[in-house]
Amino acid sequence: MASYFLGKKSELQIVGGRFRPIGNNRRPETTRPIYIRSFGDLKEAEEERRKRSSFFSGMEGDQKLYHFDEVSKHSATKDCWLIIHGKVYDVTPFMDDHPGGDEVLLTATKKDASDDFEDVGHSNPARDLMDKYCIGKIDESTIPVKRVLIPPEQTPYNTEKTSDSTIKILQFVVPIMILGVAFAVRYYTTAA
Image 1 (cartoon, rainbow, N blue to C red):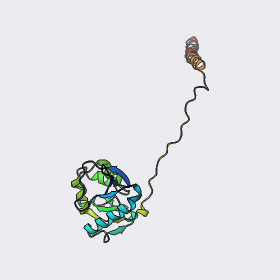
Image 2: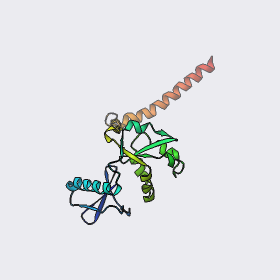
Image 3: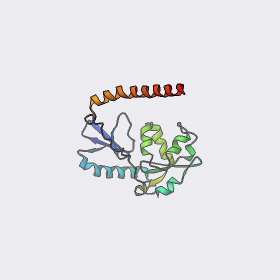
Image 4: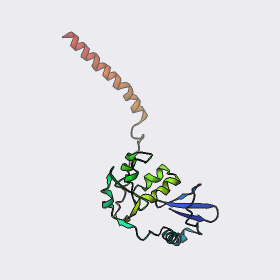
């Protein structure tokens, strides 16, 4: 999670590849804010953030790189791995302790669960707890592309094709025809 400052008033945070404003979130004590003047400086700022985080974590280069297929095999209660923000987490020991229950974690397997994680709005202590379960990184080129459902285009109702007078006549004629058929059926069934 990276923090960027545009000017002096606005602060943005990259979360799951998207920019989001930061409210009262505390920044990690291990990094200083990176000030950028424009979005063109973003690449240099991201590289600087990587250098800082690898310096403080000491394990950035030592983390194992996992393939998506390998991670997706771990989707059971006794063996559960999640992908969140490009990192792989073995949350098996945390299954019983998760406040939302183990079903929530199991539904987040076999996919990139970054959006699910951010939509819930986890607290800072919960985010800090994640480091304990991180076992490596995901090879992002192996993550399947999300399919976006585009609904078929519906043709709008064209009122010019059927005039209002035709509809009003049908509303009057159809019930009368139904009554006529009902009387005819009753007349012929009672006469026989």
